[in-house]
Image (cartoon, rainbow, N blue to C red):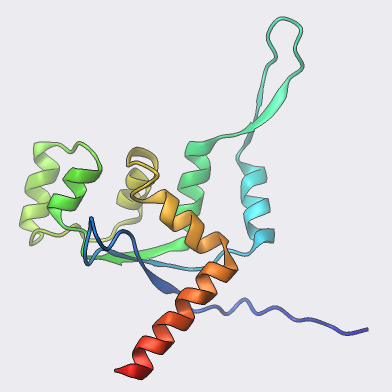
Length: 153
């Protein structure tokens, strides 16, 4: 029998969130294999009681799922400017001032990442992150592009 060993030592990658809309905003993420995702998703299941004779059903608590993805896969970011944050979600004057005091960019914080995960449009944050960290072919292809760009430089 041939034994296939799978490595857990996978280098994190920088993901361009949306180069056209948010140039320079990159999120450092790591790949999550399917078995890890399955265990995470199982922890996010909740039972919804059936109505009028319908059977109870299980569904994913999407807010909890989004927070868990961020906790496990998002390691940092760079280039999240105040103008990008304002385009992603409505922020308070206090947040605006704090970002200005931090030099105009939002420093990475896991709690801030969770806010983006659950409050910003999937199109601008969670969608790209989830696609990148759950799809090995996509993750690996990005790695090949990075290697090619580095060797050309």
